[in-house]
Image (cartoon, rainbow, N blue to C red; front, side, top):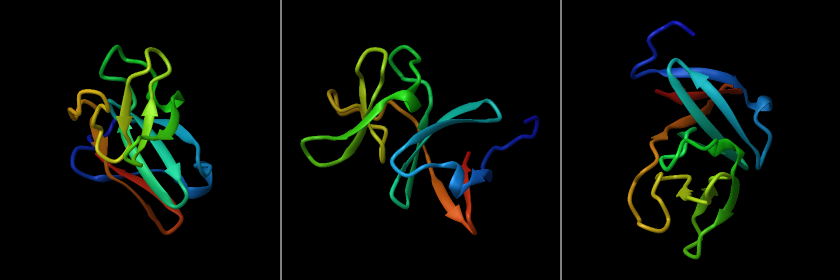
Length: 111
């Protein structure tokens, strides 16, 4: 994609392209984004782990002790909350988040 996508909603596919309780990596301009679908809710995180660039979309999703959804990077085990990008050990927002929405059967991400 050669367009400038700054500050706009970008269509990334049909809702059917995103299986429930699965994740998928998408490329929007220069951004690698990990999209997570949990039921009818979508989350977007920077697709490259803040630690050493591991593939966040390939990580396992679980719940923290506080009941928040988090993803574990498959390379070194760093965990990030899906909603906030906060790293679960040091409680710092290390992973960029992206707003994701469903609209008319399409999934869009705000970049």
